Image (cartoon, rainbow, N blue to C red; front, top):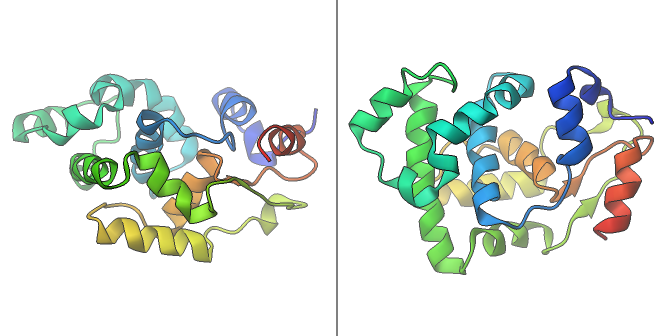
Length: 190
């Protein structure tokens, strides 16, 4: 079966492509996980993050925002020594700040999913790209999302990160039209 070209790079990327990428996510814990992972990916390859995903889940209490929001300096210092995650002080601190902002959004909107999905009118957008070169790095919607997240105190949420987040969480279906997943996702989640 034909797949998006990036999925052919490694077994972990192929599995992620075939099972997760572009599938709409409404579970707040998983939405938070992707928010942290996409921020951690800034400047790195997605395969690096996929290979550290289990390490992230262990190090960050399975992305429990309430626990992460309470991390103190000692916990942050231990994370910066953990080789199973990206040991970047700004990114680790951003995870704590983002957990705090995430909890506030949950309070204000009832769930993070209710808040984040409003940017696409609460339904996935199905694009029709012929090849990977057509897929944008950001869009006006991801720009708006990034600005709003920043206004709410989030870090590592620029327009490009937000667009990758939208792709990962199925807010947009950016599988190329020749990829077997494009039609599957469009049929199941229209």
